[in-house]
Image (tube, rainbow, N blue to C red):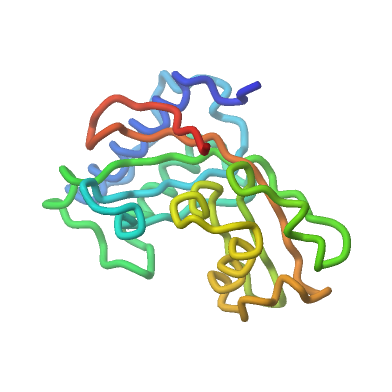
Length: 205
């Protein structure tokens, strides 16, 4: 049973697109529209991903930032994440206006992360590529990868854990440490078929 209706997903993707374009073009931060569905004022985690069209998936990423925890109303979090993905992702320079016609907007609405319990060596058996995203924390370090990432790269569960450790700035085998906390979550993902095009729900498998 989906939490997010298709029309809500479409609303969020179009909102993210508008937030990016208004900020890149005019330096403005938009406000939630008056016609925002009441359900989208619920606090939820969300990530906004910007992908370049026409390149292999492994080379497409242009920005991705979000909020793993439900700390903001979803409509507000989507606006914030969209702008941050466009101009504040430390891996990339800010998006330029000339790039807007070639960027596809994707919104992932997250369930709250839940801990993966049990002995560390059993963690690969308790997660599933094609369903789960991962959040790994150890000390001051943390890293998150969305559920679609291991599919795009062809990883199995162990490699997914290792790559999330690396994303956190930790050794790739840190998931085997007792003091490393591993969380899993799921996501409902919506994306433009092409820049400013129709919005569709993105299946993971």
